[in-house]
Image (cartoon, rainbow, N blue to C red; front, side, top):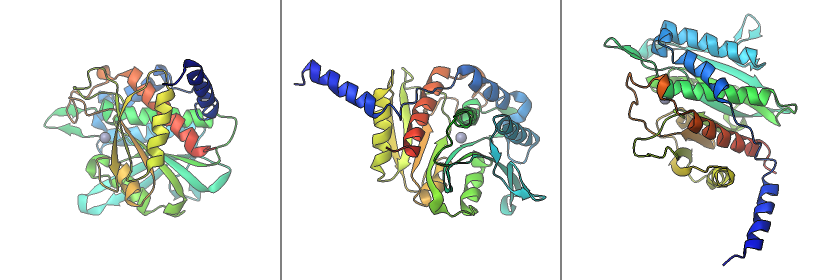
Length: 306
Ligand SMILES: [Zn+2]
């Protein structure tokens, strides 16, 4: 049995060790609610790829990135880099648009990518699918995280790319296109963090305390990192890991397929998944804030491993 005094010393040592990595940052409900409520508004008509509401969502995300002081990281247009990466998927008749912003780091030959899809299902059989949890929640978290990193006095050690993916609901076309057309070479991507559905819980998770996280198959470091940060948090989650080597249900799969380490944050399969009832009033703000806090703690550790 460990004596209480030894336990105290161990706790002190642990907190000293992780002092750098536990930033204490977490988003406020207000900063999350603005983008989430806008993106999941009925006015955006469910943000289906190629439709008007989807274009408005892309413009809005770009304007938020601009407001937060990010650097555009999309296509070159008339000699200037802009926010959008446009592409067609001809066999599906789709015009798609990823939104890409960046924070330049000290070493610009390497990057970490943080992503969340902004498209959803649109209007089907006269029913409107606003997709509040799927995935206005993830995009809102992405924006909050980008603001937090831009506001830091210190530049990150490598580039940070914040990507809002289009066409996830059309078989992950947005992230697939990004990965297949990444000019700097995939070996320059150190890590990929994904947010998809981070604000609800599985109905069986009655305490709303389970966090599901996908990691690259065999990448034990990711698992250990998340477990350590979770154990140090005020209210730890029950963690439920799964592994991917390129399979899966969200944009992380294209990165994992190329052997890039991933962390895919998913708060649970709620009862309103892909139904018109996935609305703003059901968001669990407390859970969403906790998910983003642990994701940010991990990002700190990825960028500052020592
Ligand atoms: Zn989704």
